[in-house]
Image (cartoon, rainbow, N blue to C red):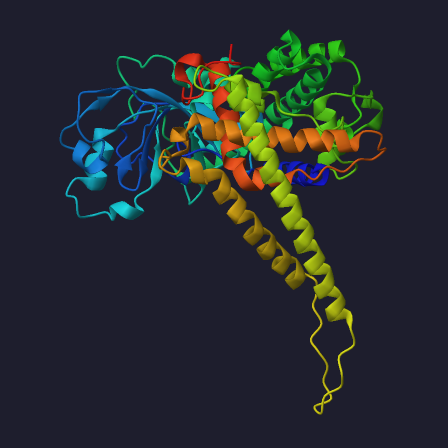
Length: 492
């Protein structure tokens, strides 16, 4: 189990380093385009998925379809809702920005006005506003509109965490101005030569001034977070300076001087930053034990995030006693335990028989085969086929045991996990408790005990995970719990 958890951690870290994230159904990864109608205001996006306007967190006034094609003529008017945009492989705080997700009637008319110009099944994109001093895509890890894909994140929990921490783009969530700025507000250069000269000057200015300040702010912000924490005033101030410099705002010279002042308060940087930042090694002298240091060390391959085992522990949210209610009294709970003990004993007998059969077959394969007239011998197995064969036999053995558990409740079960009978969920927890308690007792006195506890997860793991998720949901917000069929015991 520890090895599997370790592999899971390593894989998760590897994906994060590559900018890969696993998100829910309310978030998408789509190609970004500029708003060619100029209708979206600064900080606004228009998201279309399969030809339909997608704004799951919006409060909608009126009734009707939110289809982009239908909405071009008439329909409901959705309020502004928050969203986050991210462009991989961004690793800086500013590579995630908050925006306003809106419905744009002008874009909908251009895209879907006649209902024939676009294949709705293939129409998925996010349109960014072209207003403002800098394109939004450029602020997201240097993205652009030549085919780059962007994550549009609309998970309520992630939005609350991001906006609650004062994430980037908070200015984009400000109230809308009465009048949108004109597209002609930005000055235009008369010729290509003038544009080239301006670009060269901007490059030289950034190279010798702003970018130096940006680098100073970023590295000292990381050091401050490691030493003081992310909410410390020094960390917050450095983060704000860094984001301003990254967006080309403010006076780079004054901001660099402020960064140097704050750097003196931080002191030597943590040693783990040396491999990531480089430079003078005498500036990286502090030995850090922070979570950042552990993650950085792990990402470099210098060490692993070791999982310290404190013994096998039962999940308190899966305790059988939490299912006690007027319908399921203590006597019924004990009857469930007795029934699950019988199921556990049946499994152990079947497993022992299957294991013995596997050993006999292995010995049979190891026997030398008699020579044949063709001069050829048997085909040796590479081990993977044996493993797959064992898995097939194992799950074929477990399947009837799951049916034994479900059989008494077939008439009561619905099509969704939220409609599972409370008694069935209680029996799943009873099986979990029976197996884990026996393994705890067997491990007493062993220096390096091994726990084989997969059986309840193979038989009723979906129900155990559902019970746990429901109890966590109730603990976070009782008014929006996933379901209430388990009652409220143990959730206070």
